Length: 241
Ligand SMILES: [Mg+2]
Image (cartoon, rainbow, N blue to C red; front, side):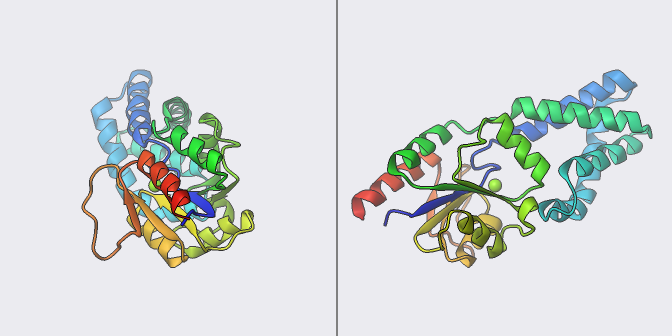
């Protein structure tokens, strides 16, 4: 059946996640040359700090209780301290470099324009449903030129509930005046996207770009390996309706 609307995840679904590693590496290199630090040591310090800090800051960021820049600053502050430099101006420098490198490295996957062309042709409303802090997610949309690509945008940090909580999906649907019936959600996350969409009564489309085994305990309604395959399914759904 042709969907009445398509909800889509952002990170690792539309947006290639490669920018994160580029931004961390580039920031470490810039810090190393400007503050006489050892790049490898700094990179290791960043990883160690993020492993500890992530469980503390991720959910508050997703729920709008902390902005992304504050979390980023605290991560760099601690990483620098661990690498032997407790200077606030170095942390500020790191935040600025990281944001600039990430912004210039944001890339949509090559199959995204084709999906948007299909939904536009078929007049299927598209709603972004993303977990993240408002400042970072809005910056991604601006940098990617996606400001007006969606019929509505639901960012967890703005709404105060995050996937897999069905409340975020309900809020997204509310923004286009739809209910859950015959609505598809596509995303790469098994817990947040597949689990959340199913809990909200949507058709859960799992985007499995990397050939991961399909888990038996969190089975999607539909599995695709690319958004091109999803576009073909949408076209086929109209023929079947
Ligand atoms: Mg994702």
